[in-house]
Length: 102
Image (cartoon, rainbow, N blue to C red; front, side, top):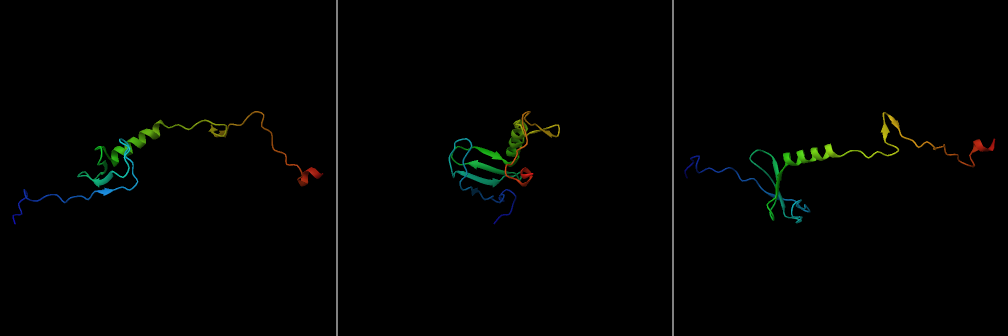
């Protein structure tokens, strides 16, 4: 057997199917595999349509989505450290408590 660099091949990285995974492009279920590429990134790839995405691309996509998301303003959302309250809110009075008997 000849051990020249031309005859040596890089070790094959195993591809693992991801049970229950749905492809974001073609929506096929159970057709997605994961493996590690030569750069060390994990890659998910659909064997039906060929869609692929690395873990670094996915992280960038998530970070961009987080930047676009804003909190909805509600009456309990703190503004300047204080909760927004309705003007006509009055304390609840519980009938039948011992303080009412006086």
